[in-house]
Amino acid sequence: MTVAPSRRFGRELVTVILFLTVAFLIAPVLLTFVGSFAGEWSGVFPSEFVTLRNWREVLGLAETIGSQRSMGWDSLLSVGGYTLAVPSELLFSIGLALGGVFINLVVGVPIAYAVARYDFRWDEWVSAISVLPLVPGVILGVAFLRAYPDLSGTSFGLIVGYSLLKAPFMVMAVRSEFESMPLQRLEESARSLGASWPRTFFTVIVPNARSGIVSGAIICWTLAAAEFNFSYIVWAKGTQPLALFLQRHISNSSFTRAAAAVSMFFCIIVAVTVLLQQVGSRGFDPRG
Amino acid sequence: MARITLDSVRKRYGETMAVDGVSLTVDDGEIVGMLGPSGCGKTTTLRTVAGFETPTAGTVSFDERDVTHVPPENRNVGLVFQEYALFDNMTVRGNVAFGLKMRGVGKSERRARADELLDMLGIGEMADRDPTTLSGGQQQRVGLARALAIEPSVLLLDEPMTGLDAKLKARLRDEVGDLLTELDVTGLYVTHDQEEAMLMCDRIAVMNEGRIEQVGTPREVYESPATEFVSEFVALDAPDLPFVRW
Image: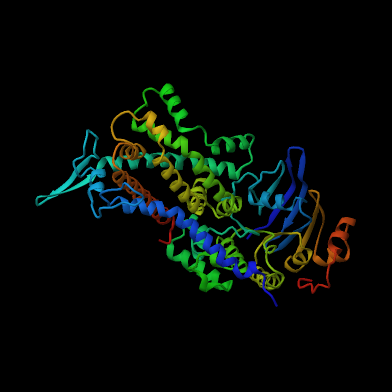
């Protein structure tokens, strides 16, 4: 009996294609990471290894050329001549994006629930508006400055803007999670067992949707942290948002230093993703 | 357990009359089946008893108490669904103990009661498991244990065996039937499967287009159908049934 070639080679072929695709996508990230430890990067590959100078400059631990602002380091505590310092400005800009995520959790989860659970008169419209990636950051930024001149340049303005721009991703992620479970049945089971509506929502509905909520939060945070256009227009003074910090290090500095900035951004994204995932699974799981 | 009385219950959605004057009494310790095609109003009737629908007209009473406007969480009804609807954020034991927790029962007592019920349903060793790792039949047993844990006035079962395969259905039918009889549960059992209704229920109410066409024992409904609809619906490939409750 002959076996069809697609059956004989199909699996291997798919594996190879997948491997090549992943390699193609990951190669630049790896190269950038490696390059961030190089002293020189003029050709295709970086050279003059290994130096920590780029990282030190990006982290604001070394003197930089020109008048660029370094990251603010505040001393946390001093013990026997050693000072433990934290990059307070960096943490603050991570917090700006997290603030947007927080607003989206408070607002987006109930919207997703309402649209998934109930049929109401304008549900199609609410659904469409909430998942429409409303406007590009540039337009929202300009409109923001016009409408709320007092908010321009403030951290609160940035946080609100991030939440508005990224809300659709939260609503979409959480809504699809709600729609994949027997939402009405879960709610009715809990109610019949004696739980009031608020108790049902917080002890049954929200924890059952935790994977959607966690992935929504991760997507929102990543996109808010990388949102350049809106940040560029609205930010005026004080601590720079992460995207602007990145741009500053890419646009007027050496290739190797840009590589260090990008690598650091990448590390922060991985760290926050892991953090959100951990908080998500621990915070919701009564078994833990 | 309690006696359930529906008196001329009507439920209208806009132009559609989903339930059109249903009167029915389920005696204490009795299991009454609501049998009918999909869209006949049997699930709406069940949801009215549970308190998720307020009737447009008519009353629902548990014993002498009128519960027509009592919210579901204060009615003390047990619900078992076709979709199981287990809480995936809790263990099997956590699911069964949930109702007791809402009633302020202490932790050790909740645990003991949940374990007792799980043992009774033959899944005692699954207590610490995540419900998503259980088979369909096991999940449905958890659902049943969860509903029974609160010692409900009435147990409402909405197509509880529809998703299961024939062999498992037969086994669960026998076991659950025996258990409900043993516990002397008052129950309303909604199904579109006449065989299931005849084996599980003491009496059957055959519904069509929002009305009850006939109420009677399985034998009465099968042997002397009151209307043409009942005769067609019940006779439809009805096998030679060992009518356990005759």
